Image (tube, rainbow, N blue to C red; front, side, top):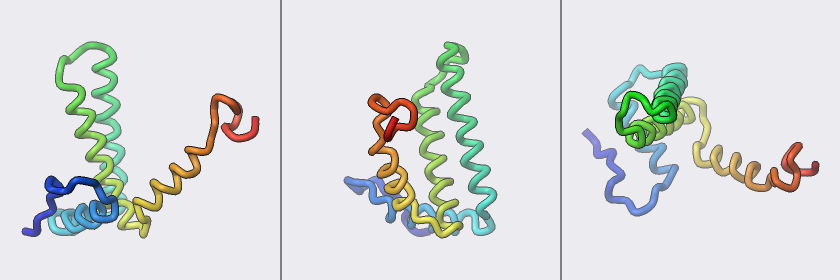
Length: 116
């Protein structure tokens, strides 16, 4: 089996990560499809919300931080696969979204973040 590990890298290259995640998925789940990846994102979002809710309620004492980190990481893995299956470059998607969001000023323009 190919080594898919990123442990020895100092920085995270999103293109490299997307390539490794896709190769891992193709090896382990060759019949996965776009729909299953999107459902995986939603399942992990539910797990994240569950951990956050129980933490805020102060019940079912557990390691909420680890549960939340696991859910966020799993969502990214599912999203990377979803993006590959839909010809979306994950890095471009993140960069584009950030470049649109970072120019908004919700303090100065509370109605729309840009002009009013």
